[in-house]
Image 1 (cartoon, rainbow, N blue to C red):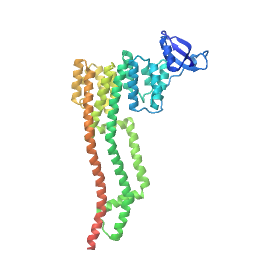
Image 2: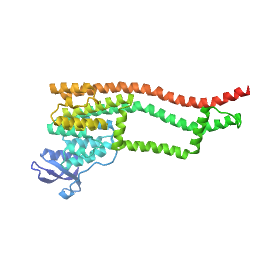
Image 3: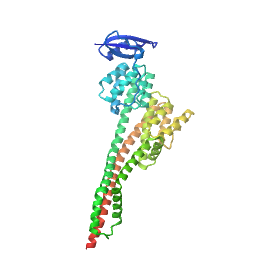
Image 4: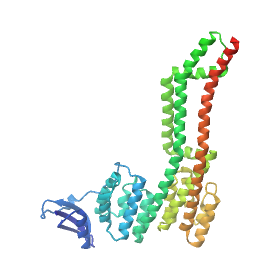
Length: 413
């Protein structure tokens, strides 16, 4: 057993200093909470005579960088904490246990700071808010609502389910885009490989066979010109292309660039459907979770607007917030140009029945199913299109080579 010195707060928030001999830190927390006190700072000491001062109180930890947390690890943590809270385990003890036994380095690192913040007198929601890269606005708001209503275990269960759906949707989108991205990279590498190494050699052979006065087909001349330009100025072409790609990605990350990019996505024929369904499913899922947790309508709309990850939808929802504040029903405030008619209709039903969260969840489920179907069909369309592009490029190069050879053969005859 080891000696621990601690500072705790009583019911009037007066600091209480003490010492105890326990097996570990969790036993100290249990010992303090059984006395009706709230632990603020705990430190292992060499003897029982040591006393902590308020100056030595642990500082509040604010999340910065550190290891990243995978979505699956966050789901597991949320479910485990929910079970512990529903079983009556104190928050600090539950967090300490999860921090000790978690297999995720990221979770252990984050929980170390969360535990320190809670020991410093923060509520759980405020402690989680210090790590926005791990616990987003929806997560923090639902935990805060659960604490206020005394149903934290229920809120954590809802959060775990929502995190699972969010993670599953993200994996499906990434899986659908993986193969097309690989094909695009293959096409680009094949193009530059042929232009830099194959076409120049074939061009020399054709010129040698035809002689200095040989008339080459227009297609062959175009391909040789492109190849010659790339070979001569590769040190400009390749860095230039890389700079354009990097610059475009950097511009998209800016507020103005993101608006342009999001508007473009909503104008492209096939991509528009995927973008719309994705934004609507994210908004409705988040809004339903927050409304069900007891968060106000305007605050729920504000958080849900940012969850769409689309500046066009975010701006439209912000306008809806203004209309709701002015007394207009939410079902009449949503933008019917961006949101399908069913959204307004279902919101109207929810307002009439008083079960808005239940009705909105149905919309989220519907559009997630529609999104799954569209992503699957989109993948089946992209694959042959990319293969056709690769085949067309190879076919053009083959035609530019075969046409002068066929012409030379005709002249020989």
